[in-house]
Amino acid sequence: MATTNNLRTAKGGRAAPSGGSAGGPNGALVRRMAAVGVVGAAATVVDAVVVQAVVLPGTDVSSKMFSYPFSSGAFVAVSLVNALLHALVLVGVVGFVRGGAPGPGRAARVGGGLALGGLGLLTAAELASIAVRGDRVSDTGATLVIVMFVVAMLLSVAGYVLLAVSSARAGRWTGWPRRAPLVAAVATVAVLGMSFSPTLLPAGVAVWSLGLLVLCAATYTDPTPAAPAPAARGVAREVRLP
Image 1: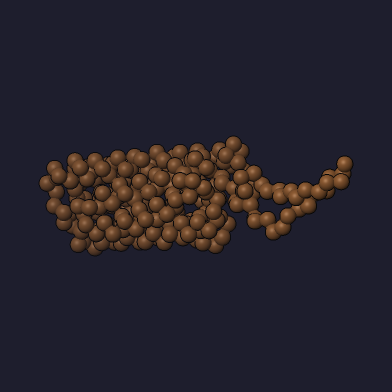
Image 2: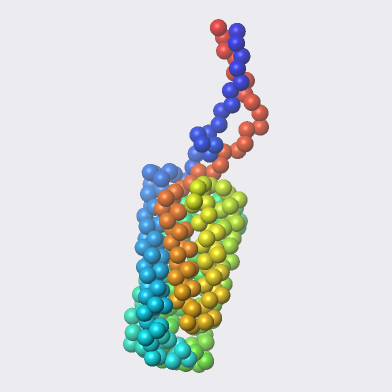
């Protein structure tokens, strides 16, 4: 009679995902949502870089005007495009939250709600901007819209910080995706700091969108990550008969 020790663990040390796999219905949906977010975030990066490198140097619009650096007419189209891009990114962030990478805890739920609420308010602020495009930044209407933008970014900062913490605790992502929530959080803090300078705001938007692009790309790469398998507390003894 021979005896051997046999330690059984899940493949790769991770439990099977409860919300579906990358090839399952939920995983396929999350991946499609992440792809939408990638498109929206990438387009926002390009848009912000063009504004910073081309539009700002050539504008003759006063920085005291709300529509700066765009003319009143061009600002309408810009605001509508920005609102659409924010909505696309929102879809990607919904996919990230739905995929389960932040884990099941309270921080994940609250962080997801704050981040999505921030993006929703940001989209609304873009649309509200159209009504005050001819105002000076010191006018009451413009001030109210600016407050909407600031509140949206504060909600986003709080949301992405919580999501970064909850994702790190959950430990569901491995490799480069595990750093994606932290990148998104840092990028959101960066745009908040740069938003107080009209000449730096487009660059801040580019940094922020790049962070969300990384987050959506990570979600696309691993849409429904499995939770880590619990550590084995003992060794199962297997008895083999001759």
